[in-house]
Image (cartoon, rainbow over all chains, first blue to last red; front, side, top):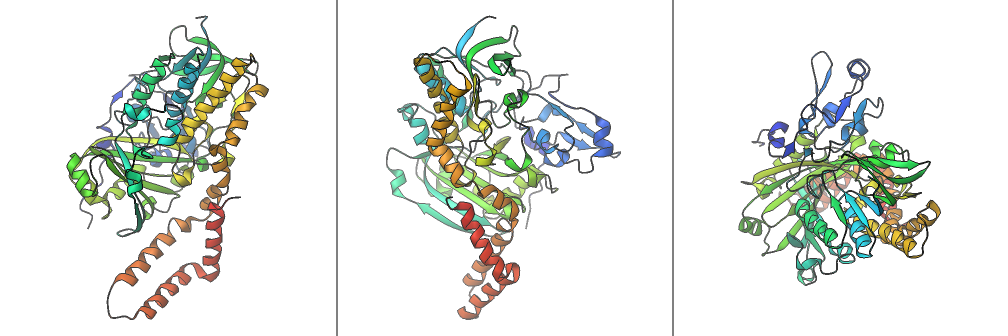
Length: 100
Length: 434
């Protein structure tokens, strides 16, 4: 019955307008080892609505903030480890909603 | 920069604009700082505008505000995997001026609102992220932005910096947000020719329909979904509590795509052009999640103060009202020659308590906890309702008494008599006044 395949999140984000602050990500993982070894759930990889967090085969969590919609989900769901340095992008950078 | 203002407003959303406008209109010197390229470029909402709240701030807003459609019909749908049980309320009452509710597109509306703020005399600076509050002991004396010479002073800072409430958290005025108090909503905007929208929803020019949804569309999580008609587009989205998102494995975008594939929804957006995908947090913790909202030299308004009535899908009107009340508090202190100390600014809390904002939040104080503890309202009941409708409506030679017994048995089998009675009581407690 379901004929449409699920759209990749990249295809959705492609519709959005961004001004990326190259080389200055506004979110950073504080301690990558902690994600790899001490966080079993890695819920950032599920909950981030832009799919910014991906888990590699060796358990490492990779963060690429380019598609970030600045919602704050990742920071709040990381409540057991508080392993993110989370700031707003510099003024004028980041997502620029056309419609919102 | 040794500049000093009466008031600095952080953020140009509904709360910030309401606050800046009200202060500027009263003759205070106002600086409003917005991190987006333009006001609205960081803001996300469904979006429905409640006329009452904006009317109290800008009475003639209808003259030139960018409004999409006024709403004449409200549908409520309970969705199962491939069915939907629902109700529709449509009334010509809603087709008489002045209209009560409109759909809007925030990026457009916020730019309009900001022009009003600027005309009222406020200085609005965009592309300026406020990094932190300037403190003198416990007293807020200004803000530090990421611009050159970014320290600016004010007698009072109104924090309308949105759901994440970053500044109050950094200053230690409140703890980090709790996943159980925040919902993540994702939405898309789909463009269609105006005539197509009007024929699909049986509406005339400027008339609009809103559909609020619950049930399987949230995959067992506490949440709701929506679909709103704009002039030449449809926005639809789904939101669930972060504490529930955390516990499961469906991504927000997969949830949204499942919703779009639902047989009751797919035909409504068939052939449309998706032009934007957005995500935003909604503070849904209710009364008990509202933080300290005033202190020496500062006030919190809008989403930053958790002012959202989740059950009634109201937020922007609470944002505008709290922004306005925050502004009025400062205006009154200024007029009386009083300083913006915590005891003096506590008048803001009294105004909030006296308004529909805190009265409504208090009325539904128990709702978040009850719904958190009883996921059956989002899973079992939608399924049971759908099966009951299916059994009753299908004509298959089975007599009606037997059908009724079958329905009763299905309900009891899933929830037990005691469970049904206790669920009814819990639901009543969640929505009934204290």
